[in-house]
Amino acid sequence: MSFATVATLDEIPDGGVKQVSVHGDVVGLYRVGRDVYAINDYCSHEETFLSEGEFEVEEMEVECPLHGSRFNVIDGSVRILPATKPVASYPVKVEGDMVLVGPRAEK
Ligand code: FES
Image (cartoon, rainbow, N blue to C red):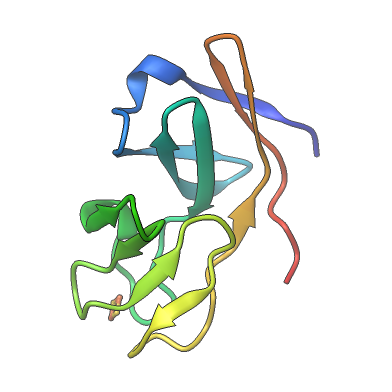
């Protein structure tokens, strides 16, 4: 599976998130300047979208809107319970204005 163009940079607010669908997965794209990070958008605790939670840019964490678990947006690791399992992360390339996402990184 190769990289797929999923968004333009200006579709993602700086310090914000955009939900996209790629390779059959629902993925949240988190932007900081010209850097973009991609993690699976389903919380690993129960099914809710992490992209509807708060993105804490300084911590590079997103807080689940349902029970408050926090996930690192760079590698999908859990920072705060009740979730115990990481979410998948995906490699991202920014080429000019285009944001491309590759296949999920295996844990
Ligand atoms: S659904 Fe995300 S912490 Fe419970």
